[in-house]
Image 1 (tube, rainbow, N blue to C red):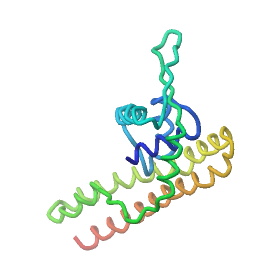
Image 2 (cartoon, rainbow, N blue to C red):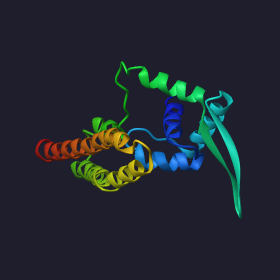
Image 3 (cartoon, rainbow, N blue to C red):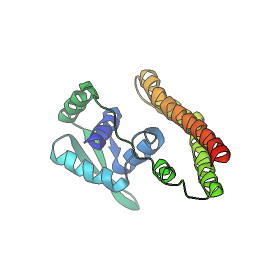
Length: 184
């Protein structure tokens, strides 16, 4: 259901193809909400069947036709209803590195440290992406949409969440590596 709401949210900005929705999601919400291309197309088909979106097939020279989706009034009402409902519980998370670490007391110390350092590198890369590329994308989107400055305020809040999450993960990894070096 939430993928549907994410797609409605993006289509509320402007009509898009399934490919454009995937690209937009990858550069905007991927730090907290993502989907595979196949999930997007399957969900769009269901949404069209439910009257939340309509599509228009547009011919292209030398390339396959493209299907552009537009949110309907029913879709807008559905989006508004979903937005007005508060989230009343924390969302469960799955962290593979934590699961592995939890059961790794009998593993070699250096192997644990190496795995954690690899994770640290990944989190550092993501942090740099949020601090650079993602900021630029938000500015570009804001400039292209009516009311973009207001929207960008909240987009930046979600970007900052991703940035702070990566900072926390890096701190936790550093503490855990230190603990392993000193105590195991």
